[in-house]
Each structure stands twice: as C-alpha cells, then as structure tokens.
Length: 135
Image (cartoon, rainbow, N blue to C red; front, top):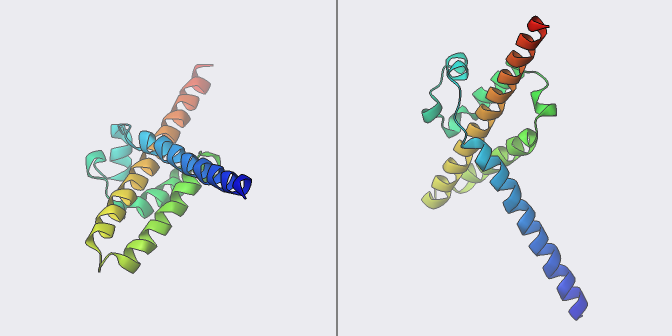
C-alpha cells in the first residue's frame, strides 16, 4: 500500500513539474519582443495584443507560413490550451470574475506566443531568402 502511495505521489509530482515546465517555456517565448515588420503585416501593436487576437494570428500563420503549425514546437498545444481556457471562460466567466480575469490573461499569453512564433518563422524565412540570393 505504501509503495502504491509513493508511486501515485511521484506520478502526480512529475506531471505537475512537466506542466509547469511547459508553461515556463511558452511564457518565456511569449515575452519576447515583436519585430516591426510583423506588427505592420498583422496590423496590430505588439504591446496591445489581446486575448481576442489569437484566431487572427492563427489565420495569419496559416496564410504566411502554412507549415508553421506542424513544425513549430508547442503551437498546437498552445492552441489547444487556448480553446480549453476559452471554454472555461464561457462556462464560468460570467458568474466568477476571477476566472474571467485569469482566462483573459492566459488567452492573451497564448496570443503573444502565436505572434512571437509567427515573427520568428517569418524572420527565418527572410534570412533563408537572403542567404539564397547571396549564394
């Protein structure tokens, strides 16, 4: 019985650590500055990216860099997380303002992450094009 308790406790602790590690990775990515070229292309101010901009940014990802969802680390997972948080907000946000506030912050971070990933992808594509021209 003690061995089972230790096993369950260890698995829960490992899962909790994995989730916090995953969040730390994509939150640190989301805090990176955006280039002016992306801000002009997307028509949004980097400092004003909000929770409602996620779908716009994902559509922009599909148009400007079609394979980005498959090749980018964590973009599919962040997109899934955004959908879950949005559903929680719709279900409980009206009755519980704290959940609505939390959900808005989380969805804003997801939007920032999508913008940074798109910005990095576009920068890499431009670098490749310049390198190909130089060769």
